[in-house]
Image (cartoon, rainbow, N blue to C red; front, side, top):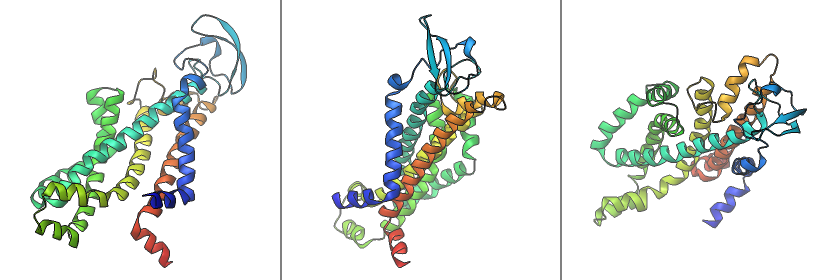
Length: 294
């Protein structure tokens, strides 16, 4: 395990992704400290202020003080810097939670479909039917039916990802099931659940971790898309998507309203994808063999 961890950490892409994500996680956790004001507070006097503008800011306590607006304000007079910082919490929460939920459910379905042929015939047809529906349309339909809440958004984004994880795990199980050590375990009467948990599942973990990073990046983007379309969380809860959605109205006069959340969104997705590529390079034996052959 230590040797594997050392090999993973030697990969430059893994280190880059981990550093960027660690900084973003710290920013999200420290949002109440780093955020200068309440992200939902409206100051009608200071609407659409430019970045680094010096203004007299009236806060919730009705006290007026001189402030520097690091990223300016939006068309409602809300501080963009605070909203972007707090928005990191929502985006990272959605990405990580969707990845965990889809991996747990997809792994269970994949194990069942890959190991039991009768289950495979039924379950995979259901998964194929779900994959026939574009993920964004399925997410929009679920959010429209259940309402725009954080739990609803997470479920709506996780549901389209489950079939993809299921197909990956199923393909892994179909390959592992034919290995000699699995046949030996079956021949000595090892219970099926022990075979799945002690032999099949551990040999599927590395590809699943890599897939989880891609699911996380996709979920962060999909949450931003839903918020941008007005189908995500309400504007009282800042997310990078709804910040950009509100900014498009005044983009010609105040483009910075969209730049800052867009930079954070792009950097987060880039870091997660780079991390996934690095993990694939180090954890996938077949990829390593191809790389060594070159």
